[in-house]
Each structure stands twice: as C-alpha cells, then as structure tokens.
Image (cartoon, rainbow, N blue to C red; front, side):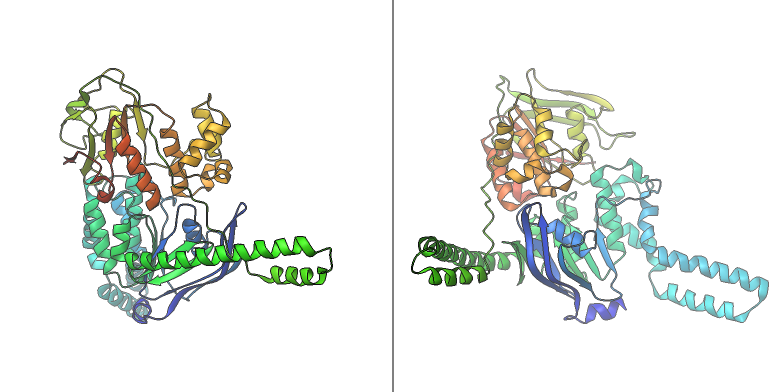
Length: 519
C-alpha cells in the first residue's frame, strides 16, 4: 500500500477546503485552500503568529477549524512530530525507539503462539498461518531493526546519551530528538514536522537534511532555519494576509515570487482602501440630499466588495540589552571543570573568555552545551573543578526551554511578577518592542506560538541589566526578521556574550571566535 501511494506522484494525500480560523479578534485564515500531493516536500512559512502551528493542529485533527474541511486520502499512515507528546518514561531510549516496529514484534509473538498451539493440537492450518507471518517478517525489516535503530541513533546524535538511558533522565531537547528518531523509523507516508532542527547541531541537521531529501513519502515542515528549508523543499506554502499561497520550487525561489506577489497585493489593498474612502465620503455627503438614490446605490456596491485583509502591522522588533558597568579584563574562567548529572558528560573543561568577547560554543548535541551553561549560572552543581566570574558580574540568561511555571499567566502578568516596579505601560512597551503586539500581551502564555513565547523571554532579557549575556539557542521558533533584530541587539551589547546555537548563519558574523567542545 505504502509503495503505491509513493509512486503516484500527483495523487492528493491531503486537501484543505475553505478553512477559516480566528484567534481572539484576529483572523488567521479566511476560506483558504491547500493541497498536498504524494511525494511533495512542502515547507510551511509565515511570520511568528501567522498561524503555522495552528494549521498543523488543524491538519492533524488536534483542533477543529471554525469553518471548512480537512480531507485525508484513505489508508494514509501519517507521522506527526509532537514534542510534547506523552511517552512512557520508564522505557529506555532503545526500547522506546523499537516501539516504531510494534507491528513486527506482534507478528513475532503471534508466530510463537501459533507454534505453541500447533504442538498441542497438530492442526496444519496453524502451521500455514505461522509460515505466512514468517514470510512477511523475512521480507520486511524485522531482522534489520537493531541496525536501523543504531543508524538512526548515530545520525541524530542520540547514541552519545547511551541507549540504555531511561527517558525520564532526558532533558526536553534530548527527548524531542528521541521522539523525532522514532517518528523517522516508522517511515510514514506523510511526515508532519514542526521545527525539527530546534535541538540539533550542524552535523545532525546535515544528516536530517540528507534523510529528508531522499525520503520517498510526502512531508510538511515548519522551520525558521532558512538554509535547511531551502535544501529540503520542493514546494512552499506561505501564510500571509489571511491567505495561504503555494509556490513550486525551493524556498529562495518562493521568496522571490512572494516579494512580487506582496508588492502587487499591497498595491491592490491601497487602491481598494482609496476607493472605499472615496465612496464612503460620497455617501456621507449625499445620503440625505437630492442624490440620496445614488448614495444608496453606492452603499450597495460597497457592501458587495470583497474586502482585502489588511497587512499585519508588524513593526520590526528592537532588542536593547541594558548594560551594567564592570571593570575587568576577564569574563569567565574554568579550571578542570567537570559537568554532568550522575556521571561526567565531558572531559574536564579549561576555558578563558575575555571581557567583551562574543563567543559561540559548538559541539555534538547531547554533549553538554546546555549543561555547561546551566552549570555556569549555578542551576546545576559541577561534579568537580571550578569556575570563576569577576566581582560585579551580572548574568542575563536565556534558556531554550519554553516551560512556564504558570502557563495560564499572560505575558503582562508574567513580566509584572518579574518586575513589580514596572508600570503596565512600560511592560506593554517592552513587549511591543520585542514584536509582541498588544492583543497577545493579554493572552495566556500557553496559547501563544513558540515564536511569540520566545519574544516574551527576549522582552524579559531587555528589562534586566547585565554585563554577561548567556544565550542557549535563542533563535529557536523565531522568524527571520526577529533573528535580524536579535543579531543587531547582540552586536551593540558592550558586555560579554556566550551563544549556543545550531544556526551557524546566525552567529558566524557575530562572534569573535568559536569554542569547540568535544567529549
């Protein structure tokens, strides 16, 4: 069945018809259509808050649209990367990955049962049934499972965590990787991936890129990593102005086309606004006079106009990180620092970072970059060795995890609790500067998109005085425009900056040097 699906290239696997969705008083999409065909590699793009993750939830059936239909082709095996899915935490990584082959293991168990029954009853039909199942196992992947799991674990850098490690011992990022690995092992007809590169470093992104390029099925991918998206897409679906536009070609081709479409749309929108204003002025002037019949006729014409959605007012974010003065030549020094939880993750670390330096820390995923940062800020205790900051060091730390103590709090309530002296007006201003529009400031944190939640955290950084910025994957979830602004903010910061990021494109022109961490 799967092979048939993969070969019929123009067969529609998924059709969205007249989908309308509102969030608060913002219309995300109005009567949109989208079709995904067999073999298509579709990238889903749009600014933060445009409704990308909401569309994925509609596609997977997690939420029902306000209006419209979602139609899947029958017998389609779909795989969705849900980073928050509940998993059995008592399983080891290896046991969890092997659940991707549960059907094969069921067949094996059934064969054993049939032989058992045969030994008791000597019924030939049982042997025949067991023989058929055995042939299915022989022709499938059953006897390659260990190899496939090992290859996937190595490709995504999971093997360094130890395959016998229980899931409950993993960090959020490590867990996401393991969930991604299991999903890829299942080889569904359609993959649905929301930010799959978030917890991967360069090497593993490269591996995933190659995997997806050669994937025979279809997939829909949301990613803010433009370089990655450009390499893996055959089509792009762009959400803007409440519409979804589908382009054929890689991301760069789509963006060129989009720019032309955008200019044309804005011309149409402004021309329509002009026409509406003119007509409304005429109606106001003559509705009570001798030309009232003409005015009524124009009103009817106006009522029939299909009004174009206004362009979102997206002022470019501005990130100013307040500087706390300090007199020193040194920012941080480590001496034989050993980090980890129950056991060391790395050899002893000896680091010296001078004051005012901007450095990126690179290394395999799972190797301990986030653990190193958490050790330096005192969140995790070191296993051995020392680290030292000069007096008056004020650390401003950005954590990659989107975990909120009170997820039902609004951004305003959250920041208000962190900065009790700040007025509501000040808080709103900081949120708006970070690219979070007014309405969203009063929505629960848990209902915001990943990009919008990240902007709340960045707004918090802009309200803290510091002279050492420590940023753990700050570009996860945020759109291109926000990344540019963040780059500018970091460049202008006079203090020291330590960045962990899987996006080389983001930090390469920003940092003075790259520190490689090896196991």
